[in-house]
Length: 126
Image (tube, rainbow, N blue to C red; front, top):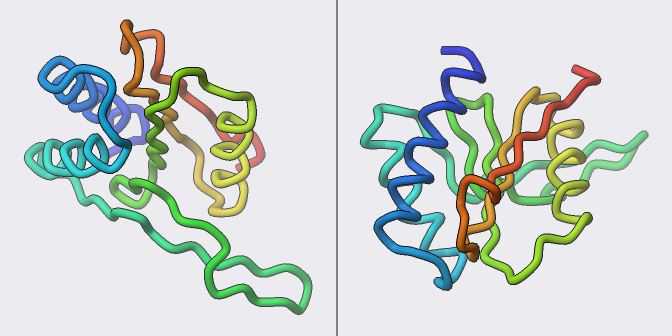
């Protein structure tokens, strides 16, 4: 399955979760329910995946955690904030670069319009 095919299924699940629960809940609620929906679609999903970092001769066992990793190909970062900050977008791009993955989705569930709150990020250096 390609990243685009996976992304389509992720978006489908995001819409279902948002339309059922609405805005204003904690990120952990959306994360748990979204994972449930993704697994119902038959997708392989990792939650809060720890990612190590190598820098020159330094190894850091835990550098960051990915909210959701789907099919070991697409990162999903979940927010439930009043306003998305530029740092949220930059964070996902950095995660893509450090994991050498191509595609990520940044979604803010605390919104009146979910279609405007799903941001697709591509690692052009892959």
